[in-house]
Length: 247
Image (tube, rainbow, N blue to C red; front, side, top):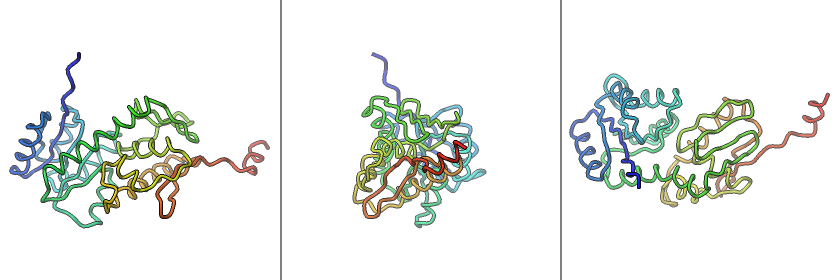
């Protein structure tokens, strides 16, 4: 049997004490780690180390964490990122999600909780792929492939989503036209307790909608279902639109 691939984790932290603690903890769990003490080194290691997941401090020398995240996402690098920072206000957390973070942990933090967050994020893609046996889903003009994790549009372009955004979209597409409760999405897709008080889901949904708008995706819609959750629907062209196309 082939040897199981070791999880590769990039720790981006300028505090030597915290970096050493994280490194010792994760290596004790058989995780292959690398430490970047600044944003510049982090961007180098993303290419040479090719991590499966990144724990990223926001306040860093040379290049701050949010700029590192922007650089990754602008280059369509969708490696999952957990932000780690002293900043704890709701606005700062939302800013992190808007920049493309997958999760957010504030200092001081529990190593056990951080490990659970890492595992939850990595399970998302596996569960989506394994449960649905690599089924490619089509909704409107989108073709969503869980094996390649690619979203193709009718004009042959692709829609670039973060890991969490992709998992959310696939989960809702597999339940097309169904109102899926917030609690179900939080627990089954995002790895949160269904009773968690978090705005993470709202921000991820908003980011997907922004990317739809940016690429002119108008034939599907992510609808909020008040008091319940969200549903994904395909929008049929109106009869007037069809008549105009024929003229």
